[in-house]
Structure formats: C-alpha cells, structure tokens
Image (cartoon, rainbow, N blue to C red; front, side):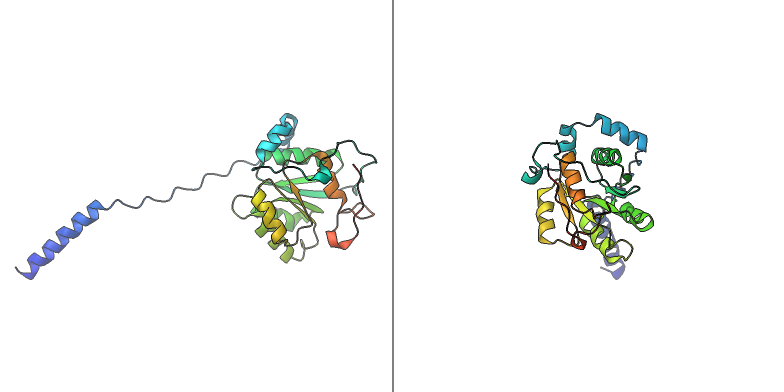
Length: 221
C-alpha cells in the first residue's frame, strides 16, 4: 500500500468519526431583561398585593423574629425622618419593591428602585442615598458582592444598609460573614418590622446612620 493510499484511508476514517460526533450546541442567549416597572405600575402592584403574595415573592420564607411578631399597633408615635430622606430599594421582586416603596412613601421617604446589584451600584454612586434595603439573592451579582463594593467606595461607605432575604441559607451566611451590613430583615416582613429596623438607625435628627455611629433609639410596639 502506497503512502497516498494510507493518507486516503486515514482521511476517510476521520470523516466517519467527525460525522458520528454530534456538534456541541451553541449556548442559548440570555433572556432579555424585563422592562423596569413605572411608578404607576408599582403603585398598582402594591394596591393588589396581599400578605400571601408578599410571602410567595420570598424564597422559602422563615418565621418572623419574635421581637417583631407582635401587633401592628404602636404604643408611641413613629420617629419622623428628616424631610427628603432618600431610600434605595434593591430587590428583583416587583411585589417586594412595590410594597416597600408604598410603606416608605406613606411615611415621608423618597424612594428609588433597582432590580439588580449592578443597577443598584450605579444608583448609589450617583444618588448617594441615605439608606439602602438590599436583597441578598439577586440575578447576576448577589447582595453580598454588592455590599462589599459599597463598603469599598468612599462615597457609599457611610450609607447604612439593611439586608433582606427570604432564603434561610442566605440568612445564615449573613450572620457568618457580616461584612458591613447594619441590620437584616427576613421576608415576609410587616410594616412594624420595616420601621423598627429603620428607627434603630435614625439619629436624633432623624438621619439614618451606620449602626456603630450612635446608640439607636428603642422602639416599642
């Protein structure tokens, strides 16, 4: 057999092998990002939301903390925030965002919304909010990575951050590696708990401060 016949047989064998190997499918493109809800759409979601829907929006919601499981009726007036206090809400659930937004706006806070950590960082750098509610489980960058970035940057380092999540494993991870958050709130949450968390961070002038910056007032529910 000549060398040319050997080369021809080798080429034929390679063609048979290549034909028998299924091509690797191309990776499916990422789904398009859903449009950001308008303020009017968020208001409509908040109006329709029930406690059960808020609970469903959370992932495996754990029971409420005993300290915040009491009745909603307050025994003293709620602390008043400084006019124009800016709160950034970061969560990929439109229901959670809408409900928090409505609660805060009814009590005089200016609210801004982000549905990814990347968008939250852009907002925080340009807006420099007075307080951030930051979900842990987010698409793309998670809340822990977002928090680390916030704490590394001088402009956002002083901003108090309340982490929120309905995921029990994320809750445990938060307590293991507390990396600069000022408080933690589990979903589903009540109105009483939301404002109790905020009041722990308000100073005498009604300005949210980092938890270590002052002794927070005691709220009675």
